[in-house]
Every structure is written in C-alpha cells, then in structure tokens.
Image 1: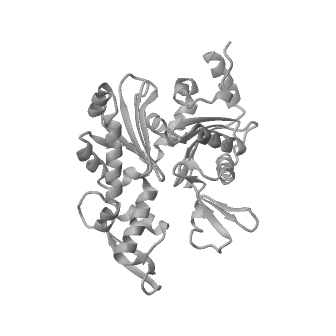
Image 2: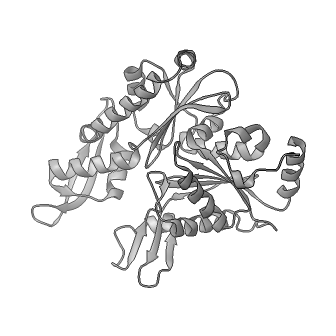
Image 3: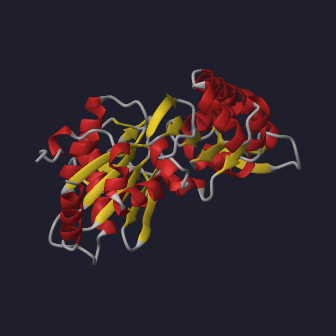
Length: 355
C-alpha cells in the first residue's frame, strides 16, 4: 500500500505542483516545491461592497488600509486562525495559489498542505479544505501548526522523546508537545500579535489621548517592543488627538509598549504553564533537557525568550527563521508524504481503500 501511494504521488507530481501554505491571521506564506517560499503577504482582501468584486489581495490590500472610500472594505478572512468568511478566503487562496504557480502551471491542480491552529473543530477543518479545493487544489491535507512548526524546525518528532513548540502568530499562539509523530498535548491561545496591537492602541488612547490605527500599532510593536529593560527605544507615532480632533504626533518608548502588552504576556505565560503542568513527567524531563522552541512572528519580540526562560524554568530557544517554521514544515511533509502521513489530520474522504 505504501509503495502504491509513493508511485502514485511520484507520477502525479510530474503533472501538478506541490504547495505548502501557512494560512495565518496576519500573514499567509506559500511554498512551492522546487522553488522555495514564493509568497509572504498579509492575509487581507479588499473588496467593493457595491459590486461585490475583489479589488486587491495581500500586500496591495494592506496598502489600502485606512485610505479607501466607504464602499471599499479591507477584510481579514481568517480571524483567530479560523476562516470567518468562506467566499473571501477562497478568493484569497485562489489568488495566492495562482500567483505561486504563475509561469509554472501544470496539467493538474496542485497538491496542497495547509497549516491550521491546533484544536480547531471538524467543521473548521472542512471549511479550510473546501476553501482550498474551491481555489483549485487537486488534493488537500491539513496539519496542525505546532506539528508543522516542529517538522520545519527539524525536531525529532518520530522519536519517543518530547519536543515542545510555542508558535506565536498573528491571531493565536499554539503551544504543543510532540512525541512519536503526534501532538501529545496542545493548546490554542487567543494571545498573539493582534492582541498585542490592540493593547498598544488602548494604551496610547488612555495614556496619551491619541487615537492610532492597527497598522501604526504594528509598526510600534516591531520598532519598540521589548520585554526586558535595556537601551531606550523610541518611535514617533502619529494619530488623531482625542481632545482637539486634530492630527498630533508623540514619542512612544519601549516602556510604553512594555506596559501595554505586559498583561497579555503574563496571560501567555500562564497558558504555557498549564500545558507544562498537564504534560506527562517523562516528556517534561525531555523538554527540560532539550528546551522549548519559539516560532512565529512573536519570537522576534526582544527579550521574550529570556523572559520565558526565567518564568518557566525551562530554556527557551528561538527557532531558526521562526516566521517560516510552519510553511517549511508543510514543504517537508510534501517531500515525504508517507513518512509524515500520521501527522496530518484525518481526511476521511481522501483515504485510499485497503487492499
């Protein structure tokens, strides 16, 4: 059976592309076999409410944020890692898959592996699968993001030793303990990049009486977010004065950002502690020896690994190129589908009948 599947995959590979997708709340990354990561764009779609037509997707849509007439709206089709608008998600995936294959289209639709948050429901899994099929995929496989990240980091997931990954994305943080090719313990936490942005918007509004947008909050986070005290960092933010209603600019410091996101960081630590407390002792011993790997865009927050190490009592290591860990994992799965088949979420309507 395994040999038959390998030959089938090999033959079909000549006639279709293999595409790995990290379908994130903030950004979507696309990997094409043989070409590497070809797309890293915001998960945004701008559409015209009058005509119902899609105006822009990805970076082009992000550039329109806050600058469009009322009838053109920029939408995040994936909220907290879950599809909130099926049709717009299909449009976005169709655009990204088409762009990824531009000039390299083959006879058959692509085989696709999509990374999704851990613990999503079967209905949500079906929505992702159907959206990818509607976008032109011939075959769709789903993998949970902590598992994909562990594969992308090249941790020994098939060995009887525990590995732990914290993947801090845009909408959610996935915490997972992996051993023997499966997720032993996992939790999906609604504390991630978007929550940090909201914290910054609220802090600037309450402390400085200035209204800023999400995009400005994101820029502040990237420029000045640091968990530990060190050399001062500042960022000039512009927005609307809530008292006068006129434009105003202020200097935001790293202390402002630290104060803004402090409660959310504490919540994240508590959630990770809960996962550690419910992990079998044998695997916990492995994790203490090997450390916890930090992936996702949140891994770039200055001082976060050191802060987590002190709070958890376990070494926390930033994975190589943490932002692309999940999509690299989907690519490795596509390279050896048989080896990683048990790591995928069951796809009942694509099971091959036993001989």
